[in-house]
Length: 100
Length: 100
Length: 100
Length: 100
Image (tube, rainbow over all chains, first blue to last red; front, top):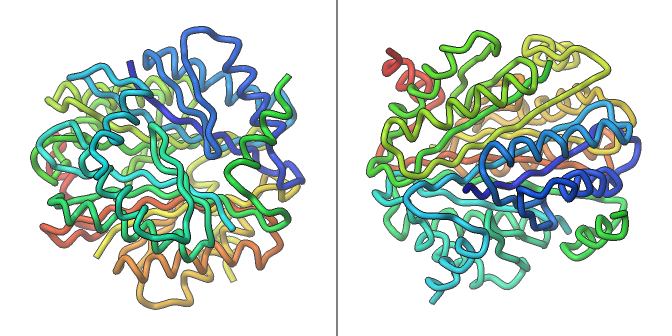
């Protein structure tokens, strides 16, 4: 299990508002069942097996072209820890526990 | 006002657990009052003026050395939109509104 | 064809020097023949088909665990433009041509 | 001294080609003298003091609005190592030395 974050930016869309494309990517993500996700103001956090995450990100990336974009920049950060089972909740909680 | 995301990784700490360093960076962030923030499993989302955000990120970055790290990799993404006032809530809401 | 950039950070290695792990990832990349690459001081730039790039990045990521790391953070940026065939050289040249 | 990488993406420009904006950012960078830089196909690598790098990145970011963009996403990665003096050349060379 890995935790990842993906952010997707369409380029050359003619308007600074890109939420329509981001919504399409979230819908593509929601169609698969293997990767859990959580939207934030700066991207989408993913939890699952590495290959399932890469597959989900590929679908999200492709969905932006389906909505008409000609160029897409997709950023993915993978956090893979093998001595312990990472989850979204565990990561946030372990920082919270150490706050003074 | 910009929305940003920062993630901070200490290198060479001897253990794969880095939540102690992340907690120190959050405490450094909490001490200043100009930048609003929200923790996620993959980073911290910031809302404020660009110069205040850069100042807060510098303090977070420095705090990791204060806790003993010898090398720190800090990633910052700045989303700056000038035709409209971006907020953390607005960004999430505008995608939610477009989901099918 | 896409252009991408990958950077790989082992966490908890006990020393701030991580070039041994980066070298292992470059060797894993050199073993495959479908993706062209170029090392920089901040990552490795990749040129190839999206699925071949994801496969190469997976091998690079895995190689860091093979060398003993317990946690690895891998960042990937994909630049995919479909109205034109992007190459590493083309991207640099098109900026150079516009410099005053 | 830190090594950093910056990439700047204008959003909503109406065309997938953004090299005109990147060239403007490079020109803004070239006007200051404290930060060394190197262009790549995926961003610009910077070498200098942290505060000078942040100042240079702010100027680059602002230059994209000066050329007419309404929204700009700027990504910055800072690699700061305090047990040793990092340079662009040193980082590449230390990986090259370890390749089999």
